[in-house]
Length: 547
Image 1 (tube, rainbow, N blue to C red):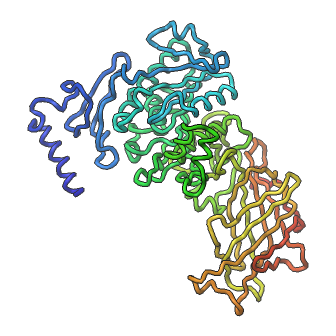
Image 2 (tube, rainbow, N blue to C red; image 1 turned 90 degrees about the vertical axis):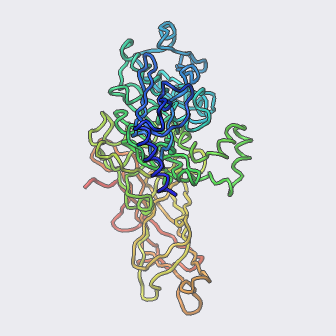
Image 3 (spheres, rainbow, N blue to C red; image 1 turned 30 degrees about the horizontal axis):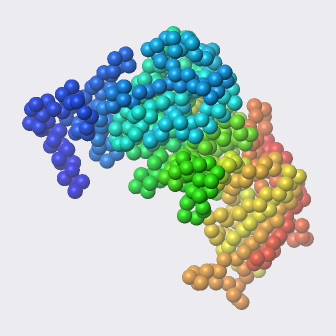
């Protein structure tokens, strides 16, 4: 079937070039009054007054990823508007039009201050709750110009048409920013565009038109018609000096995942692996009814239809004024990350970064955007978050050093839970959140876990609970009269990361805890527990020097 489609497309294209299928010129845009999908018979182009022109070339087509392309709806239908909010008018927006100089001069716009642009996505409007929430948090964070880009006239179904409309909205936004730069001496580096879903790619189109644009933040950029397409079709690192992206719904459109999994920025963040977010499984929790009661019908509808897709917005909003840093780690895969293989954050390096609003303050970017970011393109940064507000968690790496006495089995299988005690409080962690774990005595195992509490690396005591898992479907796990189901633990190490400073110290705190009995290990019986204290020699509860 696929071969037949390819043959048809190729034949149609060749026939059109020969004039067989298009003898009347109907495939040309200037002969058509409506925008409907067509095959790429030839290059198409349309111009939009002072904004410039758009074309549709063969590079915009892909048989699988982008089979149809249309031109945007008329400017009057999309009706792109720029609504300004500042600390002087935090709730009453002012509409600015570059075609009407008076709207700008009489507004609260201050060209000396930084400017943020918020762009909504598909089937969305500036009246959505999240737009107001983000606007309010940005105004609270700093005295800035906050623009909400209203393109509700073009964000409605069909999706194919909405994707086309983003190109014209990008032209409108790019023209407006360049107008402010030329006529009001706005610095391009002071402009930051924040776009969700289709709005992220719209930001990319605008950024491509503004030389030196400071920053674009893509909040779960839309996947259909953009993933695996050339850079000029989608958001990409060349669209701004810094492009940071949060991926939260990258399962793929066939699995009802609306966001891109493909890296498309300088800093690509994948909280919880960027596919499914904790608390978004409506089959396991009464998520929709609770949200309906707490936040109303609109938010409940979003949770029902696109909980993972919207989570990127929530994470970004929380990061604006939140005190908890969204620290993420560069790693080859999420599996490597959760197994503790990428737990480092050194000053001036790009092995860690801050997800969200403060991404530009990541290590190495404090003073200026590092040229090394170009070498970072394509890499992924991972972190974990909570199920509900506050989403931001502290990251802990727990390492279990297992002993191997003569009485121990070669391996055991089961569940481990831990309680960390410090002057700041007690933190309870499940060390096997994905299910039972096979543990080989004499080995060391590490896992990265998260918790809202910050213990500051000051761990005084840990309680470790062990439960052997005997599965009747796996005969090798049966442990009755003739085997030993105990777990033997020599020591436990707990590490917590903070943002590195400009000094000579790493931001990694490590506490090593040992068993309080006379032996150099703890013998934990099935469904038993052991206590470990910070009494190991030499003491390890201190900051680590950078090697």
